[in-house]
Image (cartoon, rainbow, N blue to C red):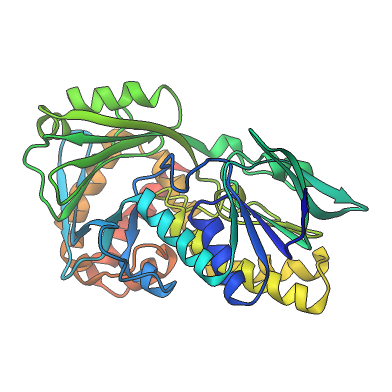
Length: 408
């Protein structure tokens, strides 16, 4: 069997679905290949997203049942349990049910005209004379299918199986952290509109741990670690952390999953002849928080625009598709640059320094200075905004001196 869309999208996660939605709206015949037999399963992240950023990409407000909670506060805990609380003037983030969110995007893409092939694992790319010209997929009961396409958009996620075949540089495996995400019942003394963030190398070396409450009284609890077994660290968090152990003393885990997160910043080249890489596979993930949905959706829209333009011009060469790299660099490059430096700084801090830094930030009133913040994704721009506030400037000066001391 042979089909011939203009664009074949590999991966039916939010980035793949959003790419397909934009392509279909632009009149481009598009087919999405998803290896699982149902969109949104398994879920791969906590779904903690910026409301402002969702509005910016045209996805907020979301339909009823997708948003599990909204948040106007965050509590940060040092390894000793010292608390820095930031309370905002209005809800800034939301937690979404990732299965429902992904299905919502898939339905929108289908309604716009995109086709979906579920239970279709893409085994290889069709490469001819240096150009990607389609893909080979297989289904359990239907055998192998060759699909020709003018452009293949790789939104397969962090596995990077197809990216390897193009000869492009893959994401930096040394910059991966390994996450565990659990859903729990019976939390105690958790603010319903606040996200909890726990810092410390004993609980999440190279990253942090989190608790995200839902309106129904359950919560999402997780962490990521640079080394070691994340499940062991989760047990340590639940049993030994000075704050989390009290909040989770009677908690029961109802679901648990594992996935890696890339923190190394975008790959140096996310395009080649007839090929674009979008989302986690291109490492378009915030190096600070590990959030990849919003930046992935942003890049998906750019990829769709460039792909549609390439097809109209009948030029799918790397020479033209490099516009994708240029445009997402213009949109996100400054923020990525800042966040990579912040990640380097965070990785250099000892637990004692983390405790000192949080105490200093509270002394100079950084918690109050952040009360009117509504931008959390574009952290380079947030940093510039904070420099205009005395408390923000003082905190950043302190942290800069600390960074220089730790990195002579």
